[in-house]
Length: 100
Image 1 (tube, one colour):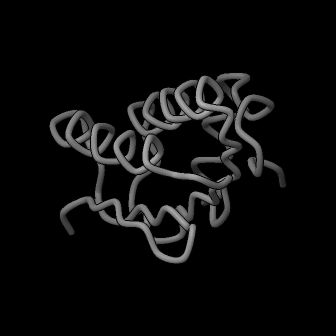
Image 2 (cartoon, rainbow, N blue to C red):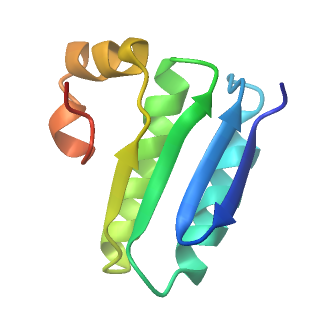
């Protein structure tokens, strides 16, 4: 499934199969949503079909942008594979909601 980002009730929903070719466009769409947010956001990753380092990179970029705008991001629906990848990379402490 093609990757998508959409806003639903203050929840940033990420779905689909993200890879190195699609991550830049998806990152930009997510950044536009974060810039327009007037409230803290939850990022729902339940529909994400991949656990890849490019996904972690995108999430960290979103985290930095949100912090610069005083918007808190919290992640939910994180797959075991993505949790493991984040822990292996020592990034789980930098992404709120990346806990087992």
